[in-house]
Length: 295
Image (cartoon, rainbow, N blue to C red; front, side):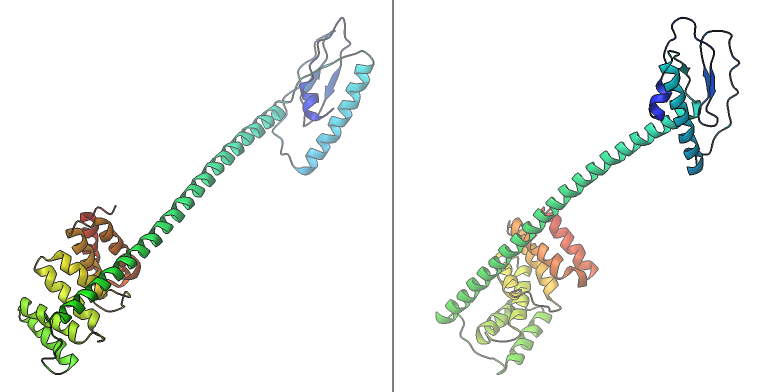
């Protein structure tokens, strides 16, 4: 018989039962046996500090009580045992702790489920971003190839004949930039177009497309600006003007009702250039994001 079962024993007596009083000391209250004269109830003991030594003593006392109960039951003399209030209170606290532990386990299960769901969503978002980046790269290559083909076609049909007004690559580029500073947009655009056709292997070819795209955008030629911005950004150069060109590409795409491509361009800006971009340029990217409804 265990401590828990001993505390729950309550048997009714039949007939006259001799009076028996058993005391458990610090662990159990008064044990009262029905029949005969009534016994005065034992005074409630003070609160007990349950250390290892006291629990061991309690275990020995309970075992003695089990043996005594077994002997009296065998002799046909059943007893009534009243549970100690402190033990009952201790059992209640244990039950409360079990309930709280169950609540914590349920909360942990919910948190693990939420974490797993968020991880799956994050992985899906990363896959989508990689997919969009691949599609934007493919679009950039297609636009660059188209622009190159257009330039070659223009050169071959006599529209623009390769020539160098200054006699040098640097001189031609500087001359086009002077026209930009002077506000002669049409002449500057023609100068950059001539530079692109004349110097196709120039290290400043991407910048020439970037400057030409700015001129087209100033003339409200969004479609033409998209082509030149895309050509300028082939290979995603690490130049000072690349962040600006990327945001302007997104703006031109949004102005051409090509919002998905605009959002892809803004995604590339965020991954490649946003960290070193100026606050004003990041604010402009946010405006384009809203305009293109990128979410």
